[in-house]
Image (cartoon, rainbow, N blue to C red):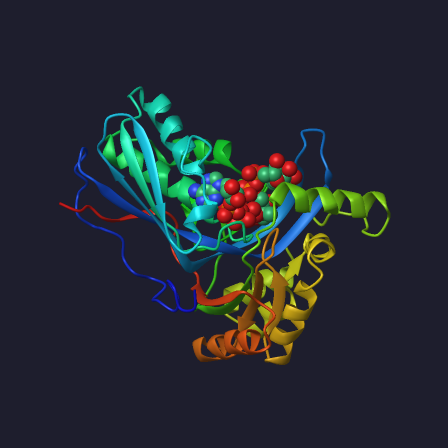
Length: 326
Ligand SMILES: C[C@](O)(CO)[C@H](O)COP(=O)(O)OP(=O)(O)OC[C@H]1O[C@@H](n2ccc(N)nc2=O)[C@H](O)[C@@H]1O
Ligand SMILES: Nc1ncnc2c1ncn2[C@@H]1O[C@H](COP(=O)(O)OP(=O)(O)OP(=O)(O)O)[C@@H](O)[C@H]1O
């Protein structure tokens, strides 16, 4: 996956042409890395409150929505076989939600082109959900407001509202209440990938076990660190690297101890900071430059500690129409 969607410009414009309902539409949405993921003890609703600082990166998903009779879905990309093509797919669920809200039949064919690792902790499925919301809204001329799309996104999953918003943002609640954060410049990333993904629910559950056993403290920092918000505003990658934080990391390392070695290799290659992305198993390493990101990726490959690598930049925009094929 090296270079897939890799080091492309962060500010590629979306389509500026007026949308024509009824015609196929292509929407792009980004994967993410959690710069900070601060997690509360398990709540009565089965979820954890979080304080998440998300950054959207240039590994992207594309969803093409075309007119059809009934709902159908196809998937292409490196790990397409691992993605369900039925009503459990988050993009399918998104189409159903938009149709219900708009009062139309869910007549659409969705084609997903996956560029974000599957079950990698980078919210590829969530990006598909966000992209499908925007695509179906455009295809059916539903005219849903940004607020309505965010409400439906929150129903689909905790990471979906951020995939709509993109760039860098602070998430609270389940992570679904997102507020944009100020940043400057671009941040360069190298990612160490594993073929065997990790279940998000499973990692949260291991986190609970570690807290119950007293291995992890049950305190919860509800505020983002001042140092991180300052580093983002200043575009200071060195300072940002020093304050990357993921409370789920001990749980991910418990479930996949080999991740520790991957993190060590990235550190030895001079990464400014290394963190497990979200629920893992992707290891995210912050680099000094695009070239340095490639060098870190090469070091992880050479050390044979990952199944694949990718490089990317942040910030990139959230879900947006990129083209409307004839
Ligand atoms: C790990 C992160 O990716 C960090 O951004 C997110 O917290 C997970 O977001 P997501 O994949 O959209 O997760 P959801 O589909 O909402 O939830 C999947 C499962 O993860 C657990 N979950 C998720 C979010 C949250 N704040 N607390 C949780 O405990 C719950 O067991 C839930 O059943
Ligand atoms: N559109 C989709 N793309 C990928 N997986 C999907 C999709 N819809 C449903 N799934 C299911 O969801 C699981 C997790 O997918 P995903 O790639 O979003 O994980 P993730 O990146 O670890 O998520 P997160 O970072 O939001 O916790 C997959 O193993 C798959 O079974």
